[in-house]
Amino acid sequence: MSLLVIGTVAFDAIETPFGKTDKIVGGSATFASLGASYFYDKIKIVAVVGDDFPQHEIEDLQKHNVNTEGLQVKQGEKSFFWSGRYHNDMNSRDTLVTELNVLEAFDPIIPDSYQDCEYLMLGNLSPQVQQTVIARLKNRPKLIVMDTMNFWMDIALDELLKTIQLVDVLTINDAEARQLSGEFSLVKAARKILTMGPKYIIIKKGEHGALLFHEDKIFSAPALPLAEVFDPTGAGDTFAGGFIGYMAKVGTINFNNMKNAIIFGSALASFCVEKFGSERLRNLSEEEIAARIQEFVGLSKFEL
Amino acid sequence: MSLLVIGTVAFDAIETPFGKTDKIVGGSATFASLGASYFYDKIKIVAVVGDDFPQHEIEDLQKHNVNTEGLQVKQGEKSFFWSGRYHNDMNSRDTLVTELNVLEAFDPIIPDSYQDCEYLMLGNLSPQVQQTVIARLKNRPKLIVMDTMNFWMDIALDELLKTIQLVDVLTINDAEARQLSGEFSLVKAARKILTMGPKYIIIKKGEHGALLFHEDKIFSAPALPLAEVFDPTGAGDTFAGGFIGYMAKVGTINFNNMKNAIIFGSALASFCVEKFGSERLRNLSEEEIAARIQEFVGLSKFEL
Image 1 (cartoon, rainbow over the protein chains, first blue to last red):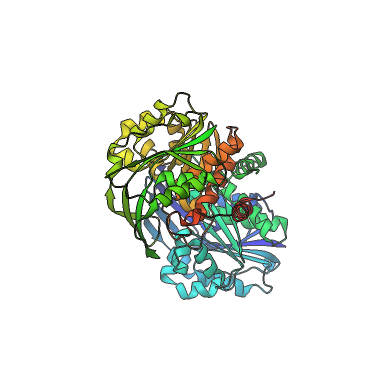
Image 2: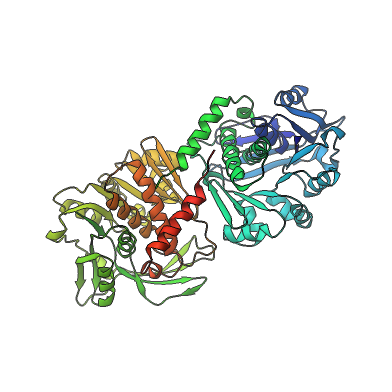
């Protein structure tokens, strides 16, 4: 029994109104596995880096209970690199550089020892690669969660739709839900997307929280109102990782557990944005997480 | 003991993607008193209309427990008229016509029989008029709730700031909170506005719900995810009216009661947007409201 995370392990260079970084470690699989690691300890990763990727960073993932047997290191090649600049409102950003490098020909090889995975997190990545991973698993996982973004809707919609058909939970943001469905109302958008394959859809609304849709049920999760968002990079991946890590921990797939998983994922994401990149996710204590969860409880609770 | 509502009683002509209306009855005091009427039965209104305002509409307010002694009817003058067209997203609108008419020289006269008011709803109106009403009350009400909008920030900021100093609760939307405070983060915006006088601030976020701030406490209320928003006109006024109506009913001013008041106000507002103008607020049953409140409870409840 394990949780398989696929996605990118990469370098980011980030500019925000608060400062800028050199190349730091980022990537959807990095954030998602770090997020999941706070709730679950049998995480296996499939991703690809170049020989420029520091060994100590791989060891740091291992210290977070992440099995890196499926992390391919391509000699003579460079890791995926993304650079972006956030605007003052921190809600929008410009991409400055995208160098695919090792990602261009990424073949997601699943080590035999990974075939026991019951939970699969398809982190943001080309839908074709996400699909290949599903096809290469001998047994269909108990729960497949897929994250994606508008980029794939723009350039690979057909492949994206094929992949969406295969998953249990789709996580996208509100603008992406509107784009994918052609509906402005998020309720209508979710209803339409639920006919495309997933049994659950989570619409991430950033500072406004998240909505979970399943059959005719809806759950509205708050976001923690923050005085400062230092760097939003990776918050969505961290959310998804925390979400599936919590589901793997509880082990039973139902709406109530997913509600809690959204709260746990949101709590992890609220830490992520406090520092650059994945820095804040490196050494969280159980006490810090428990206190943050209590903030979420206090924030939205009312008793009539 | 009573609830005094001031604001506009007016005509609106509305265009939405779903259709358009001729002149129908609207105005902040209309929506707010109808909203409050579902929780509280001693409502007194101060507003002004022209002799074009139908008597049966005044009688309909009376049927909703609204005392109209303070509703001035100006012979030979016309009622305030606003006309607007909503865009396809229903989140933005263009004002087509604004005719102030009777509002131009509105002197808010408080009948003696209104001097017992313990709750005061300052519906959206010129801050000068809002201030005058406070000054004319012999005893300061137990709770003063003020609604306003960006229009007054643009043209009467000084008067607005003087009025804000005098109230207990300010309700504004997120864009207005940002404009008033000069802060993008809603947490920072709220903190700054709390230094301007009000002890509570409610930031209305439309389809994303509302945030209540008081001292260092925050409550995040969900909005009901709706498949259709037929006409958003008056939703904010209805929310404010439902809020203060509920507070008047429970009678004790504290954070917990305000949380519930926000849920009740949100429920009323969610009805308001289902039909044009105030139509849906005219004949709600207790059962409908109770069922809607249960939807809010189900929407945001989680048990860890």
